[in-house]
Length: 68
Image (cartoon, rainbow, N blue to C red):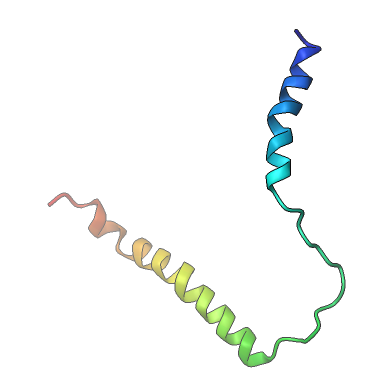
């Protein structure tokens, strides 16, 4: 039974490997540097999309606890 298990697992994962393309990972520096404006826009959008809703929920937590 223990000899058959690796073969079975290899058979199950083998088809998944064929469908997934390999990741193109490069270790080179970027072709162009981001400007300060682009970094500011990116960080602001991350703040607005992720942290602002979480802050809203946490600041109104007492209101959500009350049963109406």
